[in-house]
Image (cartoon, rainbow, N blue to C red):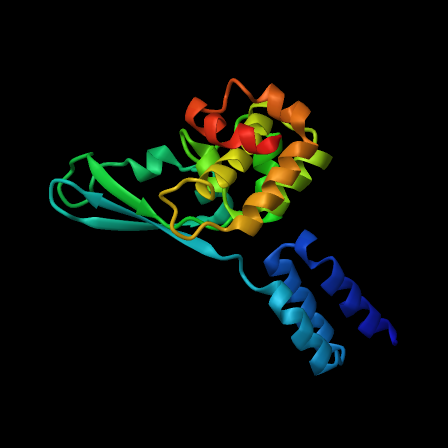
Length: 215
């Protein structure tokens, strides 16, 4: 591998530690030096602009709609610029609004940041309902076993595991995922100490259905 090929390969491997404008400039300069097109094309996906999410605000008085673009961290943790988003309507001057916004799926980076920072929230309450989903199971288990967690977040994750079992045990669920339920029950059994610590946080109606299945 010649030196410029190695340099592009290295840039590709560490691309998420670089910022997008610098990445693009680097790729451009490397192309001028004769960078191979196939290698350059492999680098391109790593150098795209970060995805943004739409926040729409509708004035309740006149119906004027204003749209803002936010990054995934701002939306996931509702880290909104309240001064900007709550500024008076530019059309009628009123200050009452209805708002809607896109929410991203939690990737490992966002999930782990939430799990270890007591100041971050996915929503004002019932956060366990957001993560009580099969797609987040591996992130929950990894966080419980490998991260230094905020106690409240640990309790929320144990509660979320119980919610998954509850949802797939309740008689009103016509199509329970029994395999998922058994998987989560086994994971709860492995973490009885953490479950005991979270006991006061978990709702009684959930415990009544889930705890007997742990025996």
